[in-house]
Each structure stands twice: as C-alpha cells, then as structure tokens.
Length: 173
Image (tube, rainbow, N blue to C red; front, side, top):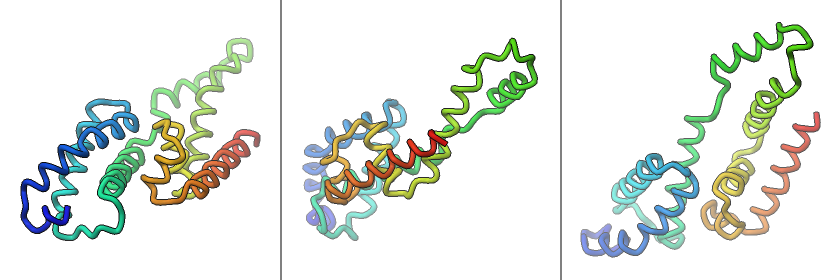
C-alpha cells in the first residue's frame, strides 16, 4: 500500500489480487445479499484508492481494509435498520381492535419481538452492538471480530457477553 501511495500502480494490482477474495467473502457473509456485497466491495476499494496517500501502516493492510468494509456495512445497516412498516403497524392496530376470540397471541408476538430486539440493539453501546451484529448476522468468530474491530479477543468476548445479557434483560422485562 505504501508503494501504491507513491504511485506504483502494479502494487495496487498485487494488493487487489491478494485481498479481493477475503474482502468479498467477508462482505457476502455480512450482507448475505449479492447486490449489497458488490456495492460495498466497490466502495471499499474506492476508499482504499482514495486513501493511498494518507495510508499509515499502523495495522496489517487486510485489517485496515476489513475495518473500512466493516464500517461501510455498519453504516448500511443503520440506514436500512428494520422498522415496522405502515402496513404492518396498521395490521397490529386492527388486530388490537378485534374481539378477544379473533386475536391469537402470536399475531402480536412476532411484531413485538422484532421491535423489542430492534430497541434493545439501539440501546447497546456501539462496541457491543457491532460485536453482536458481527457474531449473530455474519456468524464471525471471536478472532475475526477482534481483527475487524481492532479489539482484543477477550474484549470482544466481554462485549458479546454484555450485549447478550442486556438483550436477555430487555426481553425478560
């Protein structure tokens, strides 16, 4: 990356060849949607290119690159955070107005659980939410999460433990 920052185009070609598979696998596991993964893949490489002159080797290149991808993915999640849609909300309110015999508990249960999880995730500190999402949505291990977030494995384990405890407490309320 340093050579690329000094104008060596062949150095970028080597970086791309060496790290494109790792990056794409990470994004596919994170997004689980080819179109989103493709978009984030392109945006990550665009950010790498844009940062070529500012890059400082404070971490391995792959860690730095995956951190860019991770941050882009988290931004995407925040922008597209699942919200109860108008139709779904109206259905729940119509159901609430229905007579008791027509209102099985499960009609509201799924909506409530989704909303409670959403609120619980919003209440988590950023570090815990990030670790939780990487673990549960991307199915990444402690070592991978530690590498991406720049935290130690014990710190990641602690963040996950606190995140799960807070989410369990939220659901037991």
